[in-house]
View: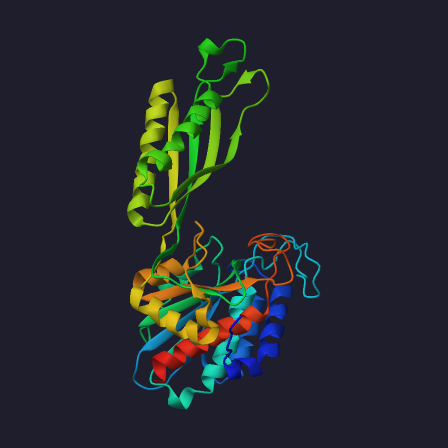
Length: 391
């Protein structure tokens, strides 16, 4: 394993890990990150940065002004998840029912560490660095709130970068590629309205359960028979509610699910076919089927030029450990920034070295990371700023 950490990051490695453990112990849900924001603000104040709080409700932004060059945005998300932590670690969450189960504690710690080192370069910077600590990534779309509050302006951000710790990749790797790296993540609710009645007299009813069964089967053909096999898409029904008793034919069933796609074209195709399938199955069974489709996170799409810059910076840290990322159909609100500004969202391998591969996946109650990955991520951020604003 060929890892060359930035020496300035290596010197504060214990501090970065300590910050991560503090944040892990004190998780807060989206738009409730008040203590988290206070902790971050205090750390940034120690660096003499200009700080704005309450951005996007609970976000924190710090500005490091250098010369007349470009403004580079570095973003970390702040929120935890509504999960009771079951892992046996000394820095276990002390907030019941809330934990950092996706690495956001590490994202903040990495950016704080990078900020400390980059502040030491302030006299040499040929541009500006904007440190963005964003709330509410987990489903609330906090990036939108920060954009609405002007995070990409004053001064205008020219390029933006974000890191995700990634337990699906080995420690010592950095996953980078241009184009889509995470999917659009939409939600939908389908209400099937039939006509209820006695289970012994089905001919007098429109059985919402039977209609739902046919609908669920038909929906699976949207991807298998409408999507190019070389592309990716997902339609999942994750929840079904309906019925009253064993001998009662249900008059209503509610289905809830998610649609995922890497391209906007496929995203819109899935949305259209969902509607058409609901209408067709409803007509076939004389039922009314109502689709409520919610456009959530768009695809996360990296710019080619900025991806190359990350690859070059990461290569100085992990050498041949730069690779295409382990891909999933997960969603990320980093996508909203990347719709406005060219940038790159990349993945730092953080699978704990002392455990079986894939044994601590994201969003599980015993989630944890290889903490040395924090130093890799911070080093890549520092190297990136060095490449962009010092050379």
